[in-house]
Image 1 (tube, chains in turn brown, cyan):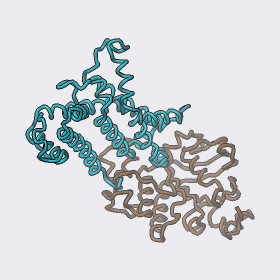
Image 2 (cartoon, chains in turn orange, cyan):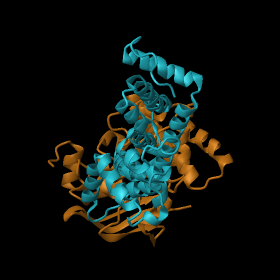
Image 3 (cartoon, one colour):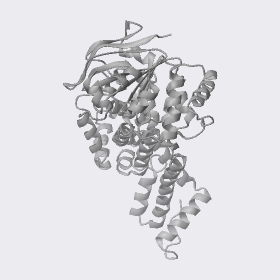
Length: 237
Length: 239
């Protein structure tokens, strides 16, 4: 079992613009790490690097202290996006797609789809058209699709942005359930959610880590002035 | 094939409709042969063109190439190529003194197929490329986060664009099936050999057989419309 993932001084630039600078973050297993920060602080960039979707311009990503390439990362991590992306067809097809391309035996796929749907409270939704679902249900299908793969690291980008409280509650419960057996890193600018869900919190500001620590102390006694302002909703960006 | 004995009894359009029904129901062998040849050359032309048009579309949609925009623009422009002009160029290629004259393809159904292949290539390439590019780019990102390889990622985009690709093929078939210039210049409208619906309509109209022309055009339109309706019905709106 993978024990932790970490970034070591990673920097990312897009067309000369600095998105992340010297970011070092460590996320242990069976924990939820919340990456918080204002819009444009680099949260999604960090997740994309961890997901192996982009390569860091500088620095290394380590899994269990071993440096890994972007291609290798895609075998360890999977990602849920802020805007859920549904493939055409049924809910079953959406969840089974990842399993099929990863050569999971056909006889196991139905069982895995069923289990994943149960975690997000969508039992019996297999035959529903994915694109006909509400945005909250689609996001839950996206989480189920990621969970079904049973990857060591689950990356979740703003999972409940613009969702109603009922869907938010179910998604938060699903994330907690997921964290029992894997590393979960979620980005959010919803501070109460970060406080409720996470064990560790990281504050990104202008592409840099300005504070990192246990969630309780992060919110109760922030050391960095910018984190204090962010928690109080007074940080200018 | 009948010769318009009912002239003067009904107006040409009504007579054409009546004659179309009669020709279809009576199983007129020549009309069936013309229709079958039209379908054969158009289906062959379209499917053969798919062999190279689909990979070209995939490359244009999925890969970054120098001159890609210019190439896409060229294919878009070629959609409107006049069939007579294309027929003329291919005639020069296939004629006895042309570079491909050795194969003696001129005035055979194969010449029409070759012409239609060339004619529909820009349609398939342009429409398929457009269909592939219209798929949400995040689908590609999603596939990669689920562990898809490069080819598997392309495959899922292709699957998402399935109905767009079907429509591209349908548009190409319709263009091939309904064109006149290539079939006339490369086929020569030889009875029982290269006569297709469009060349037969042109001939009958020139001979003053308006009602028969209308009858044949109704068969032509009926096939084109039926295919479009079948595809529309098969297409599930929730995709």
